Image 1 (cartoon, rainbow, N blue to C red):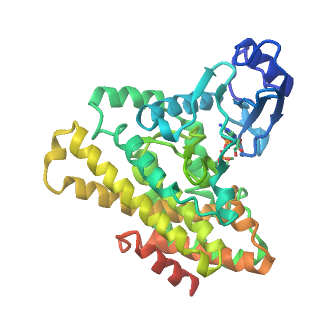
Image 2 (tube, rainbow, N blue to C red):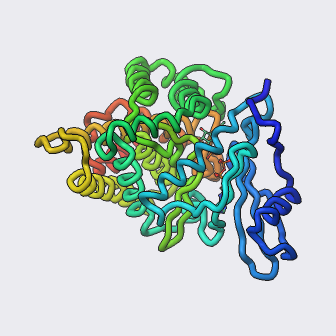
Length: 397
Ligand SMILES: Nc1ncnc2c1ncn2[C@@H]1O[C@H](COP(=O)(O)OP(=O)(O)O)[C@@H](O)[C@H]1O
Ligand SMILES: CSC[C@H]1O[C@H](OP(=O)(O)O)[C@H](O)[C@@H]1O
């Protein structure tokens, strides 16, 4: 079986990508172009085209009718390309400074052509190399506050919100998250992938009924709480950054879900990087986590006070209630992301590149313990400053 595709669809080759770019007059007809397929993600093709003389470049991203990392046995809708391009354009209305410029889209060919961001570095790689990325959390806090507030029922009128929800019905990609983040890691499922030394720790997770009850509640929120237009996969591999600039890419998992999910995924990936470091180098990550939340809360509050449309937003205590629910859910979602990145199908280089092997195993044990603690203690962690304490507690378990 394969995903539905139009008769116009064909997957691009490097020479096909050059021909397309010239046909679209994105370069001069006689320009001398190079093209390389550079996709290192799990799902799509990414072609980087450069003009040899001027150095100018563009990126052509194309969805395949299946998940690249698994192969044709895992059909996947091409509609994710439309969703990704539409989400980038929508986010660009609120925070153009934090998303790539879109040059062209074609839903039939499942193609998005965008600005080449190669001047920046993928944040995960930069953090693994020990870079600080000083503005990362300030920028992501603002990205989160504005994209989430202005697509929520607080910031949109009822009809506009519903019509936007219709454009972002994304069942295939949501199913991946429902399975890989919220289900498989908590059961003995074939998709799980972990070192044999982690067997007893994994078994403990599968047996932990209190943990599984909390995961069930979080999964239910992911399934039903259409609060705002999420990025849907906001890990540090979906962010380009340097010391001054930040750009968020790859929102093909976008759908209307709980605001805390985007925040939780980002925080989880900062924590995964933190625990991969020696203790003395972890502080910068905890500061990033605090800043992400503080900037998010400040910008969300500003938008609420300035632009809220919902009449109840004027009621004392409602904003505080909404923010504390978002925070609590973010902690729980962060715990699920940490566990799935440790023992599920899709790992992260922060953990998998740790040497020697014994240190990698110990760090993964810490990750599992930390993920479980966050899920079970959502209600007790009420401030971002408390993360450090919980990590320390998890390390000593
Ligand atoms: N706009 C861009 N500029 C430069 N490189 C990009 C751009 N978009 C994607 N890439 C490269 O392609 C890789 C995969 O892109 P991504 O959108 O994450 O694909 P996938 O959807 O398969 O995960 C990124 O890690 C990055 O190296
Ligand atoms: C079979 S998809 C696994 C995993 O990959 C996605 O990430 P990315 O597109 O950035 O490579 C997403 O996190 C999925 O859970």
